[in-house]
Length: 610
Image 1 (cartoon, one colour):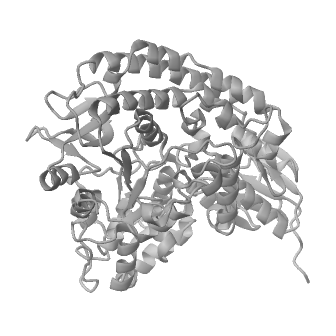
Image 2 (cartoon, one colour; image 1 turned 180 degrees about the vertical axis):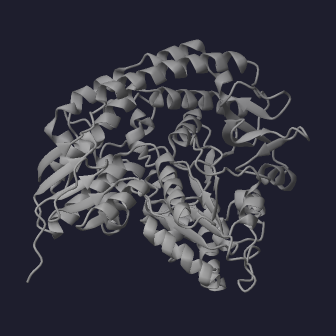
Image 3 (tube, rainbow, N blue to C red; image 1 turned 90 degrees about the vertical axis):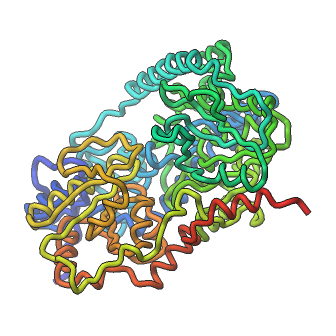
């Protein structure tokens, strides 16, 4: 007898109060503990979104990138695009400072929503289902699904549009007050001498003084500035945005950007709402809405909230001030080249724009700061619409030269439309300390009774919380498992379920048997060095570069993770990456481990022109 076709698809972001009928199908976006409980209680079929989404991720990514690139490039207002409406004469379009143009998958849920949308549609189509029961679904996702399915929302979430707008305005006010105070603090932190090279950064965050030696320490450029000075007899200066309330002691070669500003700059940027007026001019235009079409769906409801919020919050004023301050500093310092570590981030875009406005023909370099993969959407630019600025001439500010960590990243930057001669593989000074294979252990003498599972966090909070939750569920099933969590230094995550590590990276990696992560360059470094590296699949974007290059164990359910740990206990050797695989990841992500990345870059820029 043929299996009866499911009548409805239940899609759960919250636990359903009543268990669905056995003839229905469940697709779950729940936390791991709730998924585990639902799976045990429900007699019918349960699908896990983490695993089900694997088949639609490329389609979702392409749709997201296309909509974000097209929406401001469509002629709508008397033949003008939104990018043109946001352009001030002699400057790049302010659209490039808007969060939607940045495509930030870490803080903006739009890409995650599109992955969920395409996953739901795929499962429903495969089972010929037209009736959906959405339990705790996001309001905007429900609106898009109604375009094709009969939808019954249960425990629906409110849209949150009004709250988001108020919060965005509040962030603009808070930014203005903070910047005003920093402007006063930094009024004397200004370098006056001409300098050959500028290093862009953030004071206290990326560059600071060593408390013991009282010398400058840059956590991204590392020894590169010193090597450039010694090899090329070139003068350097850091051009940094004050990110705290502690200014550098003079006479350090650090110029704080806020010192370049005037009070009227801050007031003009914070109280300028003409970009919002420009959005209102195109908001109701049919062509603007059509720019969000993605096959059978129109994705505008998923973009609405962040489109509006990005014109109300501090994003555009912040970048405008960075560009203005950088322009003034460059006119005084007259650098021949600059270095940034933020590639296509809005802060880096503002830096490139300010350098360009100074009119000195300064060459902008960017050095890749962390690993990239296809789903780290903030890397990518559309070659025609964004990099070249067609059809309206509004190109995104971008670097002249890109120095990548490995061969894989070079391929990704070339997808953005750069000329091959603009993208050079050098390695990164930040990862010069990696030693391949130095953490390899003898599996024959490994202590498999007490397994140490190190959870490595990233910047996105929700995926890390889900990973922690899954590990805690496994801990209930394997009490002898030792679980700890290494927090990303910039992550605001707060959790008390598993112990946090407080030692250095070396200590954490040496004491771990297995590294579990959602995405982290630390995990990729651990893989090259010989540690077993596993991935907890996220519900949304998957930012793991190593998982895109080689096959590693990946898990989307508590059961599968538990089974793998049991398997590791019986034979840990089969999970240790072999030499050829480690070398592939090494060349793809880190290029070489000779500790010479800073030297290669210095030699390249100090080499006399032919």
